[in-house]
Image 1 (cartoon, one colour):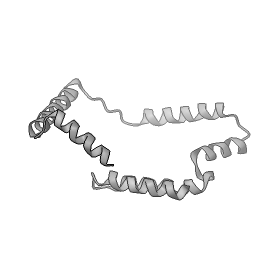
Image 2 (tube, one colour):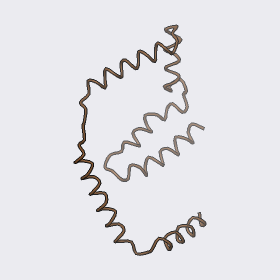
Image 3 (cartoon, one colour):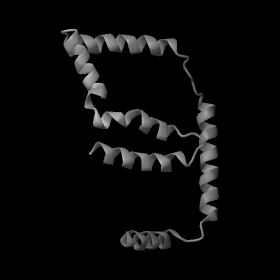
Image 4 (cartoon, one colour):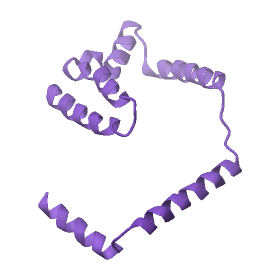
Length: 122
């Protein structure tokens, strides 16, 4: 089962990575793939092992992790986007939408008809 899931995810990663110059999806799959055949490598198994080895309840662990994550987030630079930024993104998006709509060579009804004809073939 683990090999099948890995193969399916690898195929998906190839498609997702086509849009960019990086291979981050392939790298992510390569990173997590061993976990499908070795459940002890999963995050939940590692947390459970930690709890057992420290004879600890998950409540104190959750509190400790939340404090750690809060500290890490506070130390990171915070990005603030202005209203002007969002307005420029909106204008750019509307322009792209208009360009796409102007380049359409079929109306919406024809598009839907073609869509359902092609869907039936699959």
